[in-house]
Amino acid sequence: MGHKREKEILELLEADARYTPQDLAAMLNMDVAAVEEIVHDLEQRGVVLGYRTIVNWSKIGLEKVTALIEVKVTPQRDVGFDAVAERIARFPEVRTMRLMSGTYDLAVEVEGGSMQEVAFFVATRLAPIEGVVSSTTHFVLKGYKEYGILVETSEETASRLVVSP
Image (tube, rainbow, N blue to C red; front, side, top):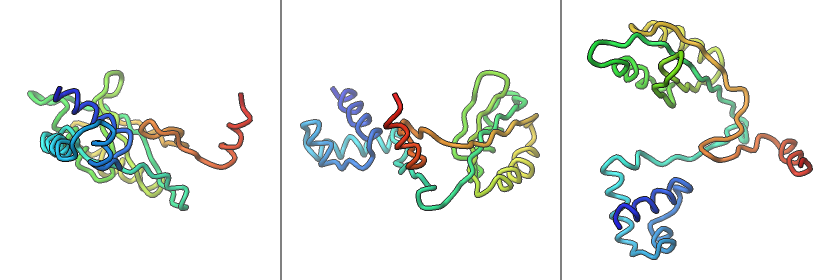
């Protein structure tokens, strides 16, 4: 029963973090205090890591540059990729990082104010790290979907979708 309620609350919060305990209690036919207790417990256990707002920065005229960087790393004795990965993950420019299978070991998502800023990050902070063998940087040209939400990029795109089959 407890895991079922946790799962229900997590699914609702994942869909919309703006739900209040009152909203969740009403939707799940639960007591508000019980919902608050479950959410607090999930936060304390590190199940809920944070809440985020997904922003379309271009709507307010702010452009940001995002790059996906594939990084090949020499694994270290006893810790494998973890030491290098944890060092890279601490940079504030790094938004997301994952250990991957395939040709490269780490997939690193970096955000900057310009392409030059991201290139400077790669050249001066990422590449010199001991254990980093090589990297390939891919700049994101356009986003269509973020965290499961479609991104409306322009009114032209929106109106074109209406008439398309």
